Image 1 (cartoon, rainbow, N blue to C red):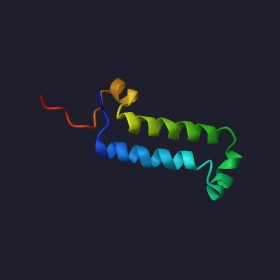
Image 2: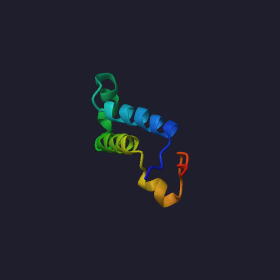
Image 3: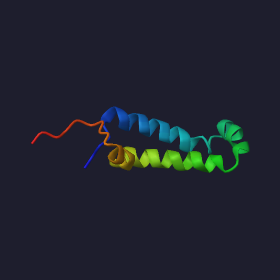
Image 4: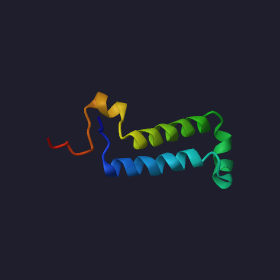
Length: 74
């Protein structure tokens, strides 16, 4: 069962990669370092976005009844 479409999947992957990399890339990491525990929240959010992009399934979409991929024709 998939509920994440191609455009949504691409945007999730890009944003997730940026959020995860923000903690590790030196120029950006220096800006994020004073945020304390929020940098871990950014990383966790990025990992969730990467996971939902990889599996093409978003539990929140299921709860809200949202589907961004086309229905399968049978």
